Image (cartoon, helix red, strand yellow):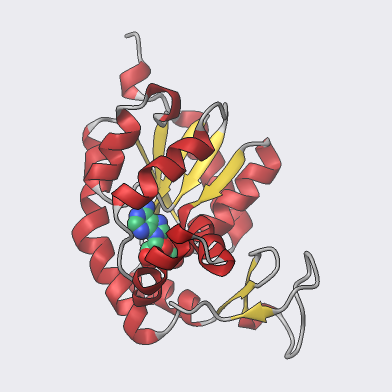
Length: 215
Ligand code: ADP
């Protein structure tokens, strides 16, 4: 299945996408991860994106659209996490049959829960694995690859606020867009990752995309 994951910053899209992709053999693409890798590698895209990502602003579609299309081309089952974030991006996917999603998954969490997750999040510099300060001991390294665990440059209070504002103005309409098309699955993103995964599995089982219904 081709899925896009939507939700506010801190909803747990990345963690959930990773769990689902491992279990079902889908490919997981995160535009945030792609952009951070480009920034770390100092590519032309990374240089253009750096200040925007660090300020919690959106990277323009003219920079991102083709990158996303190239990655998804020919991939039968994918989860795209962090894209689309604007109506322009949603329409870009919809107009490219090879990469158009079968459904959008909206991971819902209250703002205070999401902000608390972001403030206590650590990511591995090496493999991008996500963890939380509550789940590790001081000085621990990444359990997946032994890499160093760091706080993301955009996980500080002011930038989190900006990302939330951007989410409300730019991305909430994308949720409405998929809902109106009958292609939206809404799941409760609170609680531990395995519980959220179970909700996603149940929702997918019950789901029949309206657009693909033959009556
Ligand atoms: P989160 O969902 O926790 O806010 P992400 O890792 O998905 O974080 O994204 C981090 C940053 O990367 C965003 O704040 C934005 O600057 C940039 N970004 C990611 N995806 C997109 C996108 N689809 N369009 C524009 N900018 C994006």
